[in-house]
Length: 226
Image (cartoon, rainbow, N blue to C red; front, side, top):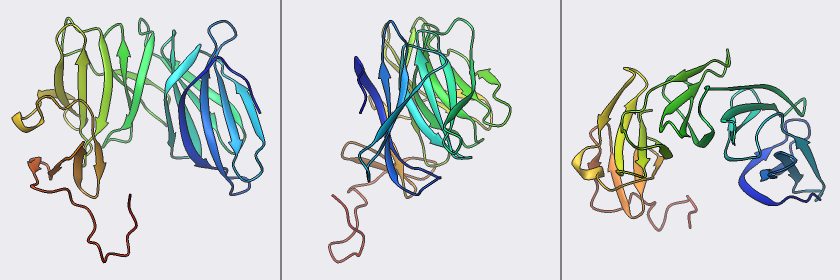
């Protein structure tokens, strides 16, 4: 339904107006600027929405209030899209930052992203749309490519490229701490049922105790998984 140079990010969402499952995609257009593309998977019809900023975006997440948020390059903007009204309602950024790479929600409800060239963790208040600079704790690194939400709402951050560094940010205290020994070398993970999972390794609880086996459902469980 739409043409673009490249598609950088995508999410499955539900259209609040008709209940249809949709694919939300963000493309890259170096000259004409980024677009949000929403394709109705039931009807096969799609529509593109011109973004108010950026040439593209790797960061895309659905948040509360029936909204999508996109993180852009080359101007490092959070762009907020109202899914019910089908329009962009706000955009905000941190001066000096050109890229927002990934998004995660913190325990404080703010939307966190990693930046370039400052190698910073920044966050967006989803009510006031103010952006907070959480710091660049791993100089001389200019990139914070990967951020992962941990089960207790802390955020695993992986900085590069001069000196690869992993740190954990606590939204409650506003401080960074070195990763514990068991997470050294881990760059990315997901939170699931109280576990932090990366590859074939799983960690439980705030102390991130490593489990001897992945916490998958039993064979006779009614939970389906792949």
